[in-house]
Length: 186
Image (cartoon, rainbow, N blue to C red; front, side, top):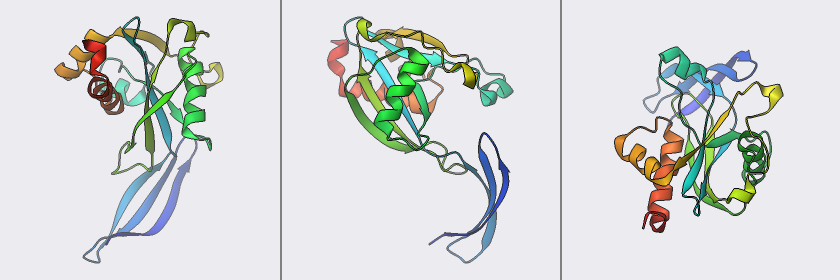
């Protein structure tokens, strides 16, 4: 069985980076690099009456560095020591101006297991037009520059089938909505 045998901090800022030593099952010790950014939570809100989902875009360094177009994402945030259900309600209000009702847990996934400690709890949540009670757009002090978009159910399904949802966690949530709530497309 593999084990972590040493850790050397490299950077402690917005994220924490470290060099780590792993002892592999054959006894060899190898160096790896670790991004320690805590755990996260994400929700795909959907309005069954208006037949839309709420997604966002925001400037992402990795996407910009690759030259790719902006990525549609579900609402998300780091846990910052809070329970996932509590934190995603705050993030939904902050990012989408949205009050969430019942949360439907989908899964806990590793965001990037080769290099990151982050696990994300994924949720679906129905909402209605009356639940859009704030402006959204993200926290001003976090310089998120979030754009909120409502995407129709049929357009979402077409993006899933065409492989056009580039964020893996958002794709998982969209597929979960399609599989768990097929009546939304009947």
